[in-house]
Image (cartoon, rainbow, N blue to C red; front, side):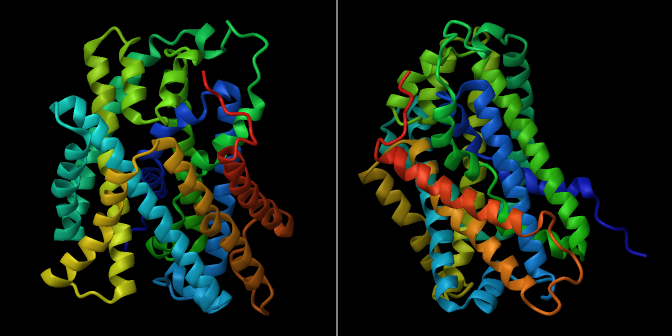
Length: 404
């Protein structure tokens, strides 16, 4: 008898998909909302994104275990909706690669003492080769990077956590401060930090049924939420709220956040651990997202899996975001915000439409049904629409923006 995969294993897969470089944007995105409202925003986002993943599970239940997100969307909602959904999937992947390339260049600039644009080119030239070579190489490198991230995160966080200043954490010097209005603009970055939905079909295939996949998804998002809480408490408990002004001025770029932290961290070993974690998080996310976009474009353009075909796919995957990064570098948080606004399509709106379509069929009520009924479907879709609206309102200066 084959042993069933553990729920903890599946939960860790979902958590690792969620926790990447996106978490590096959370402190800057949440500086205005600060501790309580930032935690509330990411908790609400986690609950909504967990529910939307369960809705995908429900929509997939009458299909083969190896079915893809695109196949179900095309079959249930038609070619046009699927084409738009695929475009949003590509946009999110592309803009995340753009953000990682820009940030890596800025961090390597300080580490290697070279121009940031040259550093970005070097980063892509070296690390995109893992994706070009094979999925197996990405798998092996990812395991090493995740192990390294865990060690550096644990060491860095333990150093920060022991020095948490409660008055900074509660922003005691600003007793009449406004926090709640800033939480709205944070939602797109929070949504990006729980973007695991392309892995839902993998979880269903992994367990061979929906119920255990449901528990693994919930476990994974809870683990991610716990890590985000720990990260925010450690940062907000060491770095005064007004110090984020200079970070936000530079677009919330990771190197600016690290420089601000360097000024308040007394231990060089903790400083090095945080810097190492940040670089590993960006690299891990870069090759993970890069592989997803690479496979998506290879399928879209029908490129072969030989060296010539993979080189063509490499070119269309990595060169456009690299060129954009060199020509129009802008903030890390801003880029992730755009990704979050676009991700609302396939993380909230499409799951809601799919589950409504599934429930309208005769066999829709058989088997796994996501909890919450029609009300939860409405809540998930409304959350997606509002998150996108809040992002564009923030871009148009129609929401209060924290400047330190």
